[in-house]
Length: 424
Ligand SMILES: Cc1ncc(COP(=O)(O)O)c(C=O)c1O
Image 1 (cartoon, helix red, strand yellow):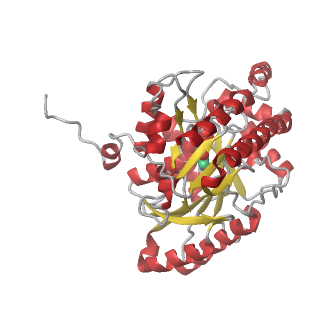
Image 2 (cartoon, helix red, strand yellow):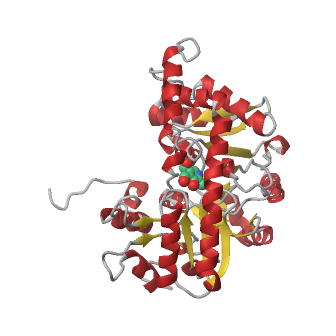
Image 3 (cartoon, helix red, strand yellow):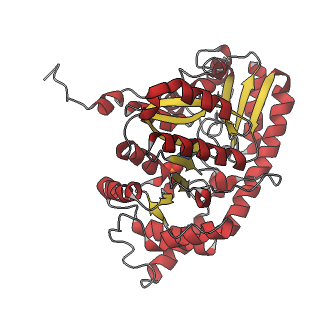
């Protein structure tokens, strides 16, 4: 049978080679020494923020109350547990304003990731407008599925409006191929907070485009890190859903960062209509539903414990952000052109004045393969993987890196920052 291969789809063929990023992480994980090496690359949450005891309580509550949590261990409906969609609505109403009645919440089969993935099946393969740097994991998925990325460099408030306008104009007739807009409200990798004014302005750009093209061009706001606004000086986020006259704005949320990634609970909130209906069918096609008892546990936790949990998680990340931010300034300050992050989420995004950060650069190699084998290896996400390869930041990205203060403990991160200084 040699020489005979399974015939793959375009997506299948594009998925046979692991992305550069996945290869780098796999290489590192292969030789990772627990307690010695320091992983600032993973987007894992801090283990201490995961409320294991609350999960035990929630499981007890769900299994004991078979009236509220009906048939929780059976197949669930594809739109999601009614307990969870109601609990999410209540939670959103407590934090901001109630979701309009004409809006719907649906639960994805496996976290926000499954909602993002579903969009690639439900919306036409075309151009996706997003920020630069951007959520590289999703950009990679999109490109393998035949989408093109139009990356808009961000400033301190999010994607730059002037650049967005310029790039839209230069598309000319190709603008009809825009499939959707995708913005992460606390950007991954940079943790730049999308300001409320910019959030609204981006909606207005999409609304103008929709009117011009006589179709609804959807805008997805990914709220993954919004609940992790830990800076007391931070301005509370304001959803644009209540102000969206055309019905083009959607929000994608997740409980991964504030409860546990392993719950795999993500949702889409948006105006009732074809896209929401198709999303429910897509969930059925993928796996019927997210595990029902887990959805009900999440509902229980949102109803009874989420405010305390949010306070505890954010206090923990605040402390880490301050300590790591101070270490970055002290150790790396003179070498840095810019530092982003530190107010929400758990990443800092650094731009060096001169130092190159990509794999193969002396800085990267000294940290990931130190000459002294007893010394800690340190891994981060090179900016090269975070910026769009054909975008305006391709060169600058070679001097950038994302450093996570989520997973590792503070003293180890500070050690890693010192090793970075030594490598410089
Ligand atoms: C911007 C963004 N969206 C979505 C996700 C994935 O969320 P989930 O765990 O719900 O799939 C992540 C995870 O890191 C993320 O950074």
